[in-house]
Amino acid sequence: MEKRKFEKLGVSPSLLGYGCMRFPVRDDKTIDEEKAQALLDHAIENGVTYIDTAYPYHDQQSETFVGKALSKYDRDSYYLATKLPVWMVKETSDVRKYFEEQLRRLQTDHVDFYLLHALNKERWEDIKRLDMIREVEKLREEGKIKYIGFSFHDEYPVFEEILTYRDWDFCQIQLNYVDTVIQQGMKGYELTEKLGIPVVIMEPVKGGALAKLPSVMEDIFHEVSPERSVASWAFRYVATLPNVKVILSGMTEMSQLEDNLQTFGDYKALRSEEMEAVEKVTKIYRSRQKNECTACGYCMPCPFGVNIPGNFKIWNHGAIYEDLAGAKENYKNMDPSKRADMCQECGACEPQCPQFITIIDDLKRVALELG
Image (cartoon, rainbow, N blue to C red):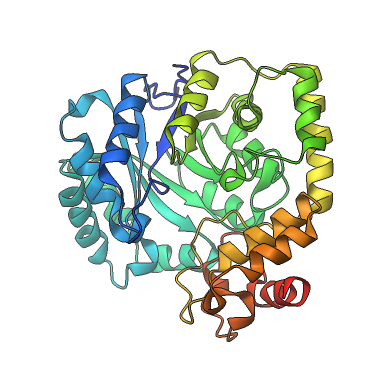
């Protein structure tokens, strides 16, 4: 398993990190613990040492399951990352309250990598107003946290303000070969290099969208490296960036894990002709997609039952694959109560969207084009 050293911290986790927000689930949406345990076990057996979860993942089930799943392992054999639910902090004392709850869920006495979760301008102002960072630093002084960072979902100016505010141990950003100019973008990554702040990458495969592409795009990749999976190109793209130390993947199926283990067990940086292939695919992809939805689910649940990511997935898939008829059929087959035309324009979703998608307007477009 490829490892990258956090020179600043003196630790070397696996380059592939396990993101714990997309475990297999049962019909009732609870985590299928048997399958999820098998995935984590196989990942750890093959050298994955960075495990990333968060307070809200899987309707607040993820931390509890991860704590149970990891309890059989030596605590020093892996690095555990979780995140403070900043939006839930109403007074300064809540920082400790939520953190102590997370320790209980995770069945541990410390967290290795602790992040202020999903920062944007509004949440950053709340962090400063309530002096949350100082509270997190107190927890580190007590030995309960090793490294302090943040995950980010906003535009570059906000990222620059946060990144230069203090000497962070690390940060976590969204980056993939399609999304280099949204949120902090590649410009933000370059700032982390300049400041020497190590980076953890999320959404390297754009929520799975870059794992399977139209044949015209896949053929570009296969002509250069026919033996490699389409998903591996996305991982290798972000791995070519030297300041990227961990790349998270929310692996739902064993086949995804096996493919990633192969990519990172025998990691090779993109050659020049491979980088040219990525640029060609990116140009075609961007010209077709309708919006930037990654199906992260932060907009859910909708108070009126609309399946927002589900609608956008059908819409984008139809556009990218140039299959309007198929998209209309898939939309027709959706539960009518979850379709885009059931949107009541309440606005609860839009402030939660990391991609700043105009969800209400886009749902109207989905209903118009597919209904």
